Length: 389
Image (tube, rainbow, N blue to C red; front, side, top):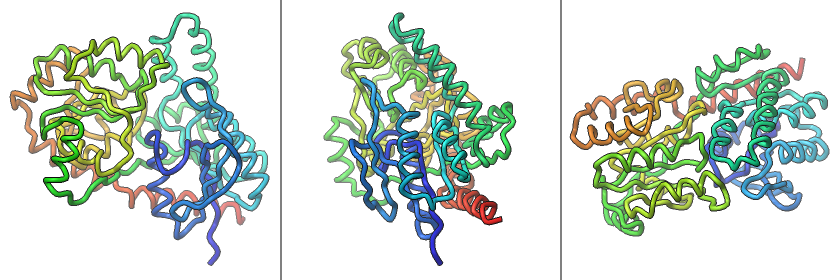
């Protein structure tokens, strides 16, 4: 039987080398490639197509600012290219509210649309504006209004809106979309069996010892509250290290602020992104605890990855994280409370047995990729059936 074609728009590309969206698409397409033929947007410098792991990567030129790509424009370019070259693709999956303009073009072309708006994107801009130079504030505010409009459109254009958390779904329902479904992300397994010698060798490369450091793996943006982590860690009396792995960019004002906040302390270490799954998995497995201070997203893939390693997780106290972790997390509301929880954790004042048990229970029952893939397959098949009527 001929595979039905699905176009995916709204990511930087695969394999994932940027954030959770790319990880999500890599995992999803790997599991569904036997049932569907996926055409996945991949930002590049010119138009061409190639194959990666059973998926067609559609390379399209990327318009970029000084520090990042510009999603709305890049999604628009990719959508026009796919519509022009692959007019027989009937179903499009768009990612992020800023792909709404591109989704509108696909809708006008008569395509069936699924859109996952991810988090509350306009709130990200609000948070980032706190750290922006004063002369850029008007631009941030205009972009915030634009993202609010995109969120509204992301609920009006698609046939199906997918929310990755119940909290996000309730937020989106205010815009009264046609059909909303809840489908979480899955927890990506990074490593299976690795010898003790290999673990020690990789930890040694970063001058680390097992259970001697706190870890964060994140995009280095203001809404992920890396500054709260640094402030809390500095306030605590911990003699461990704080390791922050992410896309540090010296040109970004928030990144510059973090560098100043660190104050050349040797126990606070910034590492560039680690894409090697084994290396990243060994860091996650051997950390004393993981700190997750994201604020405005829904279900975050980085948090789910960490849950598989059954280490204590210190999470910023927002509904999204409580929904995911439940009794499997230790929560803080600000840097002062984070410092207090760090000290309590090091004194052994938390029931780690219950925490570990809940993390495994949640990932096995709710956040496994087989379940997630089946739910997306249902959405694709639903729209394909609708198209054939």
